[in-house]
Length: 126
Figure (tube, rainbow, N blue to C red):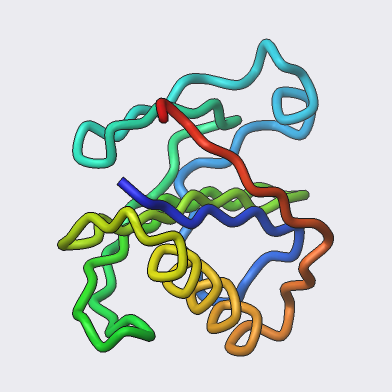
């Protein structure tokens, strides 16, 4: 699975928020809980339970993708995990890089409240 994840410190407009945790719980590691996505095959820690939405998009390579968003707004922050399962596997680094770069560039172009602070390439489970 190839995934693009994003974190943002500015709240976007119109994102529904489940009951937000208190600011004290958000600041304390003890106030965070594990959220698991069976479909996405991942678990993360968040200071509450995120809302889930799905969006259909067309990738930079012209293929349709289902993108899943898990979002949590609090009084002080906005947390989001986004992923899409690509309908093929490619060992060619250029194809994967183009998909990931395109997702990042589209996100930055569409949401003026987001600023890319850093980027790091990593590999999970090979």
